[in-house]
Length: 378
Image (cartoon, rainbow, N blue to C red; front, side, top):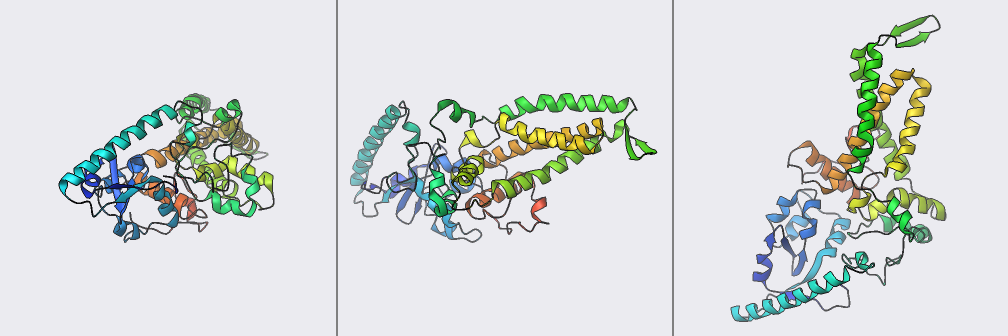
């Protein structure tokens, strides 16, 4: 809702009626929020919100057990739709007011439907950003704008919004930055399966050896393939941590336009719009550079089939990483499960602890590197 628009008013009875997955409203004092689109994104699961639908959630926002961050509160404002009218008069007056609101709501829905047919509609559907006051112009591609933010970039990029981002004006370049989650297993899993079969059958021939010294070597039996595979997976988890921490979360110098732009393209855009489903996994073309570097590095230090066995384990670890990352943003894991704790951990990284919590599939490496987010129950 634009700051210049007069707020709509709703009766308590009308707010209380919106208590389903298709239409879920909550209150913060007298402010009314439609959080329907946020249900599956909530790190604590949609059930926590559903139990409080139609009610005042100020106590839950303040905690305990979890005091929501400033970014979480700012995010909440994107779903603001109006004010609660406590002095709404008799039941007849409430009914009349609700009918007027319903009529207005129908007109707005029809208007939105028409506007969605236009090329620019993606910037208008979620309009949580004040287009006239934000530091960038959301009606234009952002890739070439963010570098001009200079010292304001770091704070801006870590204030997440629930709206799509357009990086490039060129349609082909823009499309190349978007990937549906299912393309990751479609592209990489056939390679994982083939190379696993190749490595195992090659080791089964009994001709593979590791040279320890010029005159001493040991055979590599086929039974060692699972161990080599898991070694590669474990190695990937370390690479995953390092890339996320030291590359994706580098702090570009405020005066360097190009490093700011590169950072935004690599990872900044994900933190600015963390629920943009088309940019939650690596495009296969970009991922191939990382995969190729990983393969060449292993080939340079390990014998052919041994290095390949470690590589295929790492490649499988990468596929699992991308799938888990997507699930942490859009899945609804069962409370108390491992994935539930990972989802809560990762969302805290996005909203409150951007300089820690770099593990995605595991928090293992956050322990020795002292970047663990403090435990907090949801």
